[in-house]
Length: 74
Image 1 (cartoon, helix red, strand yellow):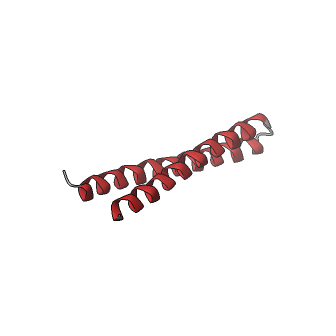
Image 2 (spheres, helix red, strand yellow):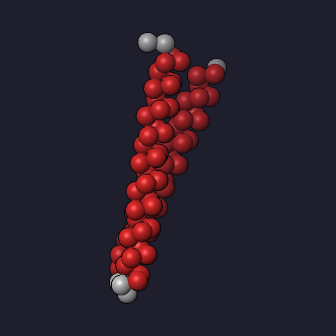
């Protein structure tokens, strides 16, 4: 397996994971809005914490993609 093929496979897998993370964040937003409309204060706080964690994971994955791309080009 060549490095180019490995890079394409890794890039595709990481994009799928990032896409799943974005969908989870949208779900957390919808749950937060629903909870606010029901006058429940705790759920949005927990959803915000979960969203921050997912955001940091997605940011790390994006940084890894850039690092891997830079390493492949050298």
